[in-house]
Length: 250
Image (cartoon, rainbow, N blue to C red; front, side, top):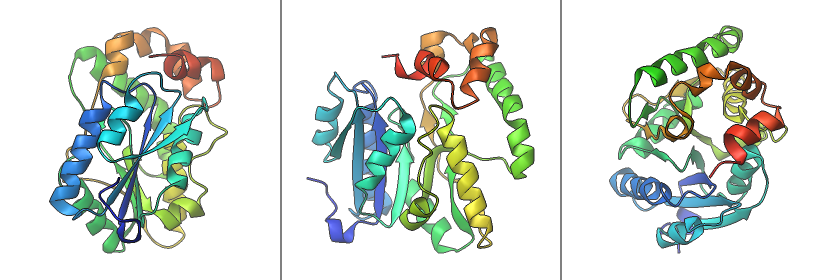
């Protein structure tokens, strides 16, 4: 059973997970530590278990998470399935291989309470570094430049946070996209906020750590060596590219 009674939930944290037994325990442990530090037991964890054939759901249950089964080959749909079960006023999404800081909930709460921010994301740090990862990250930034100029803003991701009412107002994640749904969500949240004079924020105090497992799996230079695939992923709608890099792995 979740540690937060439904009527007293402040944060609902959605964790999409496809065969994540290697990472899900540490991810949920970090969420529980942050809850103890700054959310006073008012956190609901929802693990959207997507096509799992390992112990992901079992491990999630051990941490008191609500487990939602989902069979869609669309990460936007998986995230939305988790969000539908959310009882909290504030919705947070965290990938299963991403680890939040103990102060993350406090910083999110302060940002939203201040009235300046509609919500936002975070700037994660990889759990290892290399020249290949650095150059590949710069290449991704170059691909993002047209959208950065269009939005007049650098949009962070990794950990998304906003009020549940604003998540619902923009329709959650776009299920017509098989990749880049996170950037699309950030863009729409930004535009939604601007209509009410609010900004898209980036967590500054919280140190967010994420795994470099895609680089471990494919190689640190893979995205540069396979630029056609990388560009196809950036369309958001190329099923073959998305399957090759996301849905048909693990």
